[in-house]
Image (cartoon, rainbow, N blue to C red; front, side):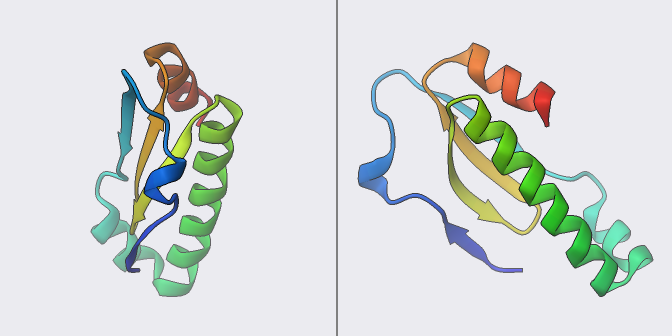
Length: 86
């Protein structure tokens, strides 16, 4: 899985921001245990859940790298709500 920017820099909010970073702990071992087909299916579902939680709380996904997400919010309450929702 490569990395890619999701949002163009001009489309990002400005001012005082809150960042949310996620990562699946033990993902390398999990991928090996599941096999690549099942791992990719799990990553797709993981991405769907995180994107929905971020968007549903007014955030913007900035970058995705493997199983890690970087999102930005205009305040900490929205970032925490996204993490809880996810």
